[in-house]
Length: 459
View 1 (cartoon, rainbow, N blue to C red):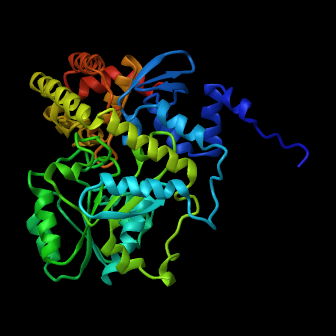
View 2 (cartoon, rainbow, N blue to C red):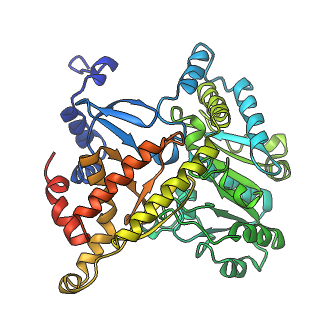
View 3 (cartoon, helix red, strand yellow):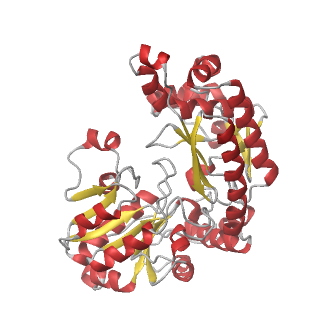
């Protein structure tokens, strides 16, 4: 291939924003580029520290999206970077060995997770952690039936996608994994009906639904689910991939009700915002039922799972979250932010609801009503359901330099998941920006008209 030119790292780092957009259009997901371009989410970010990031033109932004919960420590936390630097000369992958740092990280996870959770399986993402947990539930119980909640999100590989409670993501890939069943999140009566036959391997739940629109269940919901799983001999898997590591004001969200799961799925901020790493951790008794013999020791594995650099990042991330008391800070600053957002809601009827726990917060918008919606045969309302969150996020990005996004299952909700070290002045800047947007746009029609040029012009 004498005429082939490969980009060096140095050349790649010096690509212009125009070149980056072009390469994504030609070699990656062109449709995604088109969607991102509608709200001018094609900026080229070149530097990051804490809650702040800078684009290629030198503009500074506040990151209230936080990598969908991956950046509890913020961008490029020095402690995590230093940990990776320390191990850069160690072997990262030798499968014919027992990795030192994987053992240490497994020990630390057993110390900080609730109840009898003890044995960890390391992988590379939250989706893989969910896949592993679902497989363990079936092999450990000898049952096949899995229950998850409507409107949930657990990932997009086949098992995780089947557990995910939204048809938009499922229907193009049917048939999915058999024997999955769903109930309305928060409804323990319907859950009990599904459990009564005692043929359920596991119930898998998010303590707070993230992509569903930051949905907080009724008080006592998780406690009742735990009781029902005990009564009907089903395992309880808690997906704390977004809610874990201090995000909701406790190290793990289930600790708000002192609930102890049989398995917990973790990822995102476990890597300190730097390295990809996922894990499910389970009780010893469950592990032994599934993989408690040498003949079963390798029937579920991961090539890069538990590699040295990822585990170094995990060790440093956990230490930093604890020593910097970030769960307490999330609780305090989250309460402050929720209070100020609810004050906005009382002023602007355009806001339907503000909800969340800690620094895991969603703002939902009311759909348009009245004559204009009637005249368009409901089309206006449909557009609002799909694009209001995106338009508000676009205004925040392009006029106020605040990064956020809508939730996948409910695009009428914008999510706020900033680093847990966020300061009050940064919260105030966000609230003032939202106040400015809502003052200038009293409803969806005005929002759409006033944002038209900034959202739908070409980059």
